[in-house]
Figure 1 (cartoon, rainbow, N blue to C red):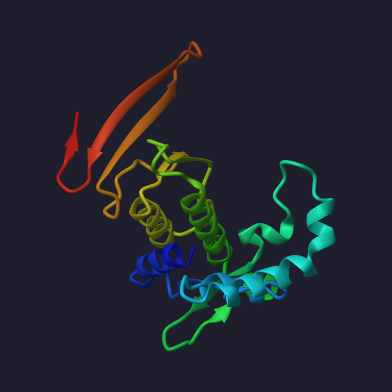
Figure 2: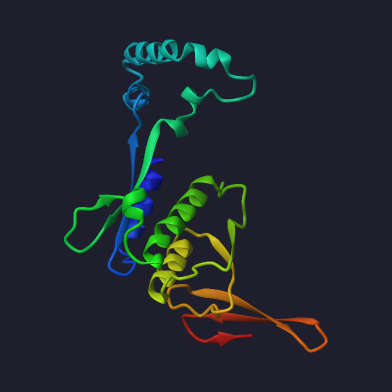
Length: 211
């Protein structure tokens, strides 16, 4: 988890969304610091210490664990609950501020929407199993509404770096993005007889239009 977060932050470090930059941080949540430290500090040469800490944690959450239905992971033993996930926003020369409901409401509509898309892409990156999924795709309908071209292109480029495939329905975009090497545009046209025609255009944005 921490390794994946570092990877994402390294990608975000080189991207500016307007005047803002973003970074994710993962910290142990209250009540779970002991189990996180236990797992992090486990060492085969000193297993007794880690086992004692683990036993103490399980005893603390014993009733919750026993009350959990069969086949369901107890909340206390689900590592996803052990951490607090936060997104920081930074401007030039700023150390950063954690985004919450108050901070999220600052700026234009486009500035407020960028963190939402970054969170969606990060969650998708965490959830997709690359070994078993050949096409990690996300479908967006009328996406990036109100976001200026610079921020929109940075979001698309970030998704490309995460090796996510975006399927975007939009009346404004043509697939030609300097930040995305390859793309395909499907033009949907309805004639006077209400027949729908699809025209596919493949773009190699590093060179020129193809096929």
